[in-house]
Length: 88
Image (tube, rainbow, N blue to C red; front, top):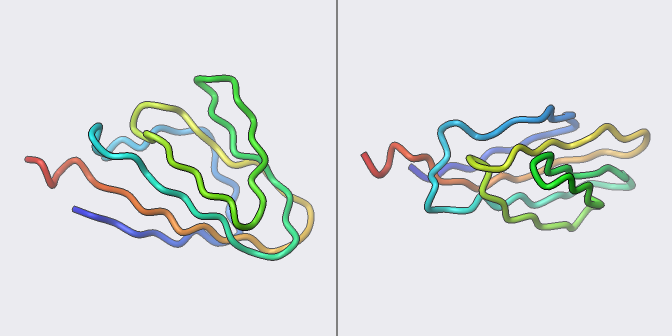
């Protein structure tokens, strides 16, 4: 099934999306005011700026990813994903 999730002011520890579909990318849209954080893809040893207005498309079931802490501002993310159960 298709899912949308709203994540507000949350530090996300490293994880893979266990229920995600291998055939679909997850789309993460970062919003908010004045925050400065990073989006990390541990498997690629990548640390990317994750400012308000940033869009990330990632195969979350395969790549371990996380969002680091920030010191000021408000942050929210809209996550759009497909669950693998839709294919069963």
